[in-house]
Image (cartoon, rainbow, N blue to C red; front, top):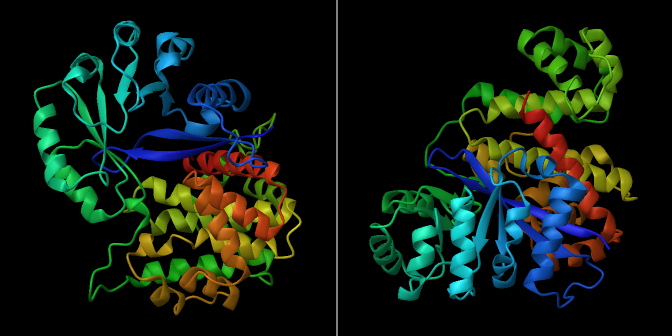
Length: 403
């Protein structure tokens, strides 16, 4: 049975990635298999570290993984690299002596311990003294209660992580309250400012991206884009020689690189390069999420037997976060772009056939497995293929982001 693993980003104060929490679901054929927390975590560990490879999932960043009481007592986290693993102690773990002893051993060996969904209880003081991170759900209590909790923890040597931060206002509030890590999808929401003008060069970049993904765009035009820009040429050589392509011999000429990539991959490369320039003042994770969505959508068309053209779905995913990148409502932006009616309806109104693909991807990245199953059913996909599409998309995006 396939193991579904998604990742949710965790940011620092500068909105740079600190790590990812891994979200798990056993195969989708039985959405609620009744597996316990021990089995779930064991599946995450075996899939992440052994089968898939942690580097492909987290890109060499820390992996936050939930551990149940039994797994902690049995010291299962000690089987995995301390430099990469953050041991999340679930909220239902009782601070009994055997748990405290196990956690103390992990802390002494250099493991980072995090208390998940934290509510203060005096009996938790031994675990608080061992933890390096305390995670507080920003939607589980009023802001006044969170502020009081922060004051109680201020005398302890712990860093605070705000969970479920969904708006920029919540991020700013958490920052002011003393939180240093942030988890949630606030970064993917636009900060709409009245009367804001979009610079002409950004509009041009958006139009280039849209034009590149037209079916009738000519290969010769793609080569012209590359030859005009030394920076793009350099990135192209880095990209073709990256680990994603696993070439035995390095490619050293632009002409050779363009031939090997082919028209479709060149379109992708130039689109992503333009996207990176467009979002130069935004968190890297926003670009990465756009790239993952674009590739995931395309793979559903290319490998999943969809009747929708792969280029249309790639464009759909690529532009799905453009409102957050441009800090402008999606409806306004779509008026400036020559995109198809189907893509426009999906992005602006969330309707039409294409919207189902985007909803599936969004559900997957948030670990909403019930939503994934529903959308996969509507689209008629073989659900067991989706984890493969997701992991290929993540690896592809991360390979591009390091060039």
